[in-house]
Structure formats: C-alpha cells, structure tokens
Length: 202
Length: 202
DNA sequence: CTTTGAGAGTACCGATCTGTACTGTCGGGT
DNA sequence: ACCCGACAGTACAGATCGGTACTCTCAAAG
Image (cartoon, rainbow over all chains, first blue to last red):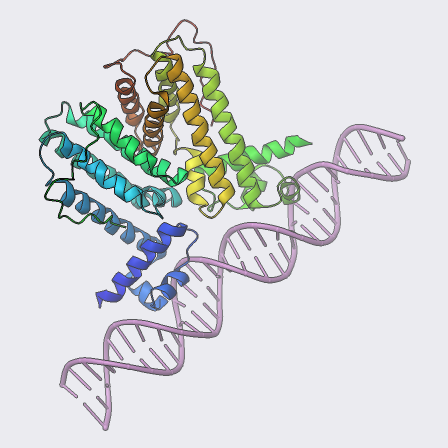
C-alpha cells in the first residue's frame, strides 16, 4: 500500500527539516515512522532517493499552497503583497528553520538531482511572482519578480538565523516600495473572503 | 608555532565550504593541510571547535574586507551601492557556493555557539549598512539596512542555487530603488581611487 | 654532541551509518 | 483450512568517522 510510503515520506520530511539530512539516519526515520527498513528500501532504493522524493513533494506542496492562496486576492498591487502576507505567517511559526529546499541543497552539495529540484523550485517561485505582478499591472514583471524572490529567500534565511519574525515584515515593506506602493501597511489578504487555507505547508 | 594552526584553519575553511561540514572528515583536513591529527587536536580540542574557529575568522575577514573597501567610496547614495558592487564581484566567482556562515549554520543546526556566530555576523552586516546609509543621508537607516540585508542574503542563496551571476545585479537594482535612486546603473566604486583590494575574502 | 620539543605519519578503538538478510506476524483471498 | 503477500523487528556486514596513542624525524638551544 502507498500509505506506508506516505508515512515514511512525512517522517523523513519532518526529521530532515528539523535536524538536517546528514544528522538523521534511515534507522531513525524507519523507527519513527513505525516502518521497517525493508519497507523503506522497497519504496526508495536509497537514502538519496528518499531525499529527492521528499524534496520534490515538498516543493510541489509549497507552490500549490501559494498558488491557491494568492490567486484569489483582490486585484491590484495588493495581489503581489498577498504572497508576502502568507510568508510572514509562515516564517513566524515557532520552529521555522528556513526554506527546506535551500537547507537540503546545502546539506547535499554533491547531488546534482537535488540541485536541479532547487533550481526548478526557484523558477516556479519567479513564475508565480511574475503572474501576480502582471495581474497587478506592475512594470517589468520579470525583473521585479527576480528582486522580490531575493527578498523572500533573504527573509527566510535571516528569520531562521535571527529567530525573530521581523524579517518577513521588512521584506513586505521593501516589496511594497519595489512594486510602487510607498508604504502600504494594510494586509491584502484581510478581505472578506479570507476563507482559504492559510496553514503553512510544513 | 601558529603557522601550522593557520594552515589547518585555511584548509578546513576551503574543504568545509566546498563540500559541507558533515561531508569532510578531520582525516581529510589533516592530510590536505600536511598536518598530523595530533597537531589538529592540539590547536582545536574537537571538530566542533575547529568549525567555530574557522567560522569566526571567516566572519571577521569578510567584515574587515567590506569595511575597508566601502568606507572610502565617494559620499552620497553611491556609498551604499558600493557594498553591492563588491558583492556582485564576489558572487560572480566561478565556484561561489553561498555565504559560508549561512551554510555552516545550516550544516550544524545543533551547535548554539555557531548560531550565535551567525547572529553576530548578520548584526555586523546591518551595522555596516546603517553606517553607509547614514553617511549617504538616506532616511530611516535601521529599517533600510534590514531590507538591504535581505537582498544581500537572498542574492547569495539564489546565486548559489541558480549558478548564474544575475542575482547580484538584481539585488543592486532593487537596493538603488530602496535608497531613493531610480535606476542608477553606474558603478559607485569605479572612481579614480580604485586602488583597494577587491579580491573577495574567500 | 646532547637534549628537547614540535610535528608528520600510522595504527587503532568505539561508535555510527547505509544497506541487506532473515525471522516472525497478521490479514485477506481461495 | 490454507496460503500468500505486506510488513515490523532484529541481526548483521562493510565502511567511515571522531578521537587517542604511539613512533619516528628534524631542527634549534644549551
């Protein structure tokens, strides 16, 4: 059944994110997932393959979550800032330890497959930002999207190091200036239709 | 003598940065440094202590390098952008793999001493940016400094993942907008006194 | 010449990790 | 009643790692 596989994948995601890929052994994953190593190696032919599968699924989950919760924001520049509102909530979670994709690609520098997953992850991020910028009629979406991605990734790592949720708000303020708004403080997602799933995908 | 110690420290810095802390053993460091493990454990009581010493020295080197090469830039807003000009050259180096401080704190999540080094590293970064912003008479230096740091750290990680030197220039363009300049393309360090040491500290 | 200390090189110990093999158990289909 | 596949649990092999102990060399000081 694929239920055992999903349990292993979720456990691997949690442990890898909390302690790093190298610090977590397959024994610990199997034990905590209440699975045997036989099952683990049946669904994933090696630890590297498990890491890749975990990271791919994680990247998919993040982007579908972002797409789902920003596509319905009210039109205008606030549609871009809706991305940052989501990230502020996400980064403010107590045990936030940075972007799992970035952390994993740092842990496993040798694996080119993981580097490719990370590149795709960033490209999709830029694509989503470009879409929101175009919908908001902001000038030069490709360039601004790349700049906003820098703010996002920067806020992610600074948050994880400082341990304070300040960086997310700084990123939003900077983004507001970059998309043309002087100092918009109002939340874009605080509309009447805040029915979406705002739980962070981690 | 401390010459052996410095050799071990430099070798550790290079290997840790290239392959990660967990992927490099003390045997490899000692061998490549042409030192014995007896020497290594005389100067550093454990691998963790070696990592801390390496990271502290690296952080010091980066900040003195930044301070030295930006304090003499011509006054005005370009003084802030001089920081980004340095980083653009640094990030464009062929084997750039991201900020060593961030990578190390990701590798060794368990060590609170390393986390403290990283926090100090970021705080010094913000301090330097605040100084340059004040000298350039930009409004609200603390806030803008935090925003610029997000661009810097974001450009660092995006560069290391994408493998292209685009992010550094994107960060500079975004910084120019945040400090008030519309689209300054001219390099601030390309003055007549470009006699400083522009080699990146890695 | 002798002594002393720094350091290179090597062997080794215990622990841990990945990956494999094997045994025991449970549940559903024939 | 029987069987068979899925799975948990354990044991094991091979390799590697951090850290320690030991020997050998060499160069400078007395």
